[in-house]
Every structure is written in C-alpha cells, then in structure tokens.
Amino acid sequence: MDFNQRVYKQVRRIPKGRVAAYGQIAALAGSPRAARQVGTALRALSGGELESIPWQRVINARGMISIENMQTPKQEQAERLQSEGVEVKFVDGNYWVDLDKYLWKIPNYK
DNA sequence: CTTATGACTTTCA
DNA sequence: CTGAAAGCCATAA
Image: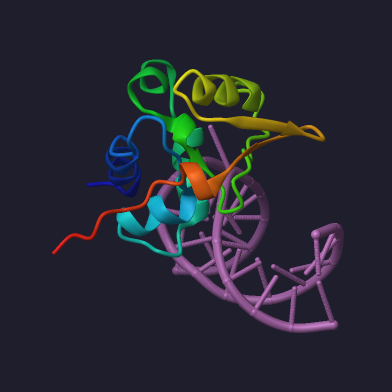
C-alpha cells in the first residue's frame, strides 16, 4: 500500500470534533519523520476525496492551519472545523486551534 | 539514478 | 517569546 493511502486511512480515524498534527499522522502511517509528506499527500487530494476524507482535521504541531494552497483555502478548513464543534481563532491572518482541548489523543494499542 | 521541492518539526541563538 | 536553520523523506522532474 502506498504511503499516501496509509495517510488517508489514518486521517479517517481522527474523531469528529478533534484535530491531529501532521507528525501524528506520519507516525501512524509508519514514518514518524515524514510529516511533510502527509501534507504532500493531502495536497494531492481531488474532488471526491475532499468530501470522503476529513483532511480539515489535520493541522501543524503548533495548532495552526498551515495551508497556503489557493484551491483549498485555509478559510474553508477553518469553517469545516467550526461546523464540527472545534473552536478556531483567527489571529493576524492565521487560524489557530487550542491543542490542549482539541488535539486527538491517540489511544494505546497493544 | 540524481535533484528539487515542500499542507512539517525540532532545536538553537 | 521570536525567528532562523537544519533535518526529514515521499514525490515529481
């Protein structure tokens, strides 16, 4: 299975109303140091996948929405998160999420 | 096969 | 706290 597919699979596991860092997804996908590739994977999403995958729940380690891509505005991500119950703050041109409250705490397996 | 690139993260000044 | 710098590694060219 491709790295991208593993990423999508993990992203779908993020509970509604929670967010996860790129690094977390990378770790779950099998490459703890491939956080940037998670972003690359999400950037490659197209039409239907944007609806079937909760990509809006993935943000950077500091709780900020780090999209600069124009086809999927960070504003849209903020809106999607808020409609799920996640509080998003808009400060100086950037959207922030309180990680202490909304970060997805991965349960211990094994 | 070799380079470039980047929806990231961590560290150091 | 702020910002610069260097790792990291899958993908694209």
